[in-house]
Length: 236
Image (cartoon, rainbow, N blue to C red; front, side, top):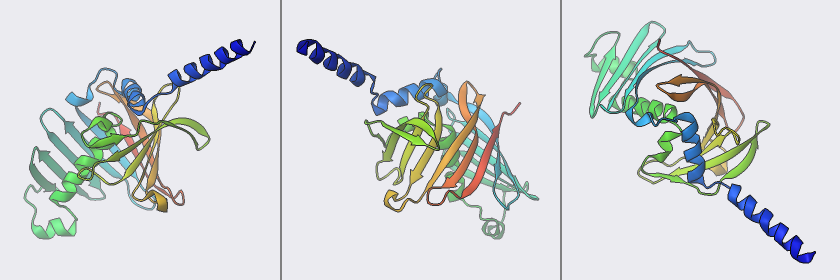
């Protein structure tokens, strides 16, 4: 009887251990869900994104991402003005209301700059390239996967940090434990201060074979203040 009990406990322990995923295994399953055919590295497509923020007019953006040719552009309309950034490898062009050579005065007045162009490039390619972008060089994936309940739902949570030359923030990615779909992500500049934001993902659009979040709602970690929502639509 005692031997049978020991064997039963041992068998249960082995089965439980075998079901625990490492961080890399969870990431692979999430990528398999979002990008089953491995299309991200050859992605060429247009994303139409409307940014809704409290007390501000909507910002409509047309984003072109061409990874093989190292091209990125974002054309944004807010109110009466239209601004556009075009990046081809290391070359950056800024266009404002159709003017392809705006003056320094116009650039300064409308907060347009090369640094801002590259910020938008990193922002959009990172967020719409998730979770595939977590395989980029400089990303450090914690191998211990956490199980957490967030907003009343259970998730498998992947922690990612970065080498100093890449970034300083700490990120958490929340995946559906059954489908491995990414449903929430969260970042902190300094986790001890509970700063940073969390982002709730709702619905999906499939673009070039990749499942991307249709709605991304941004909130402050500290007080749950709603900062805005990005809404993705297909370019038909």
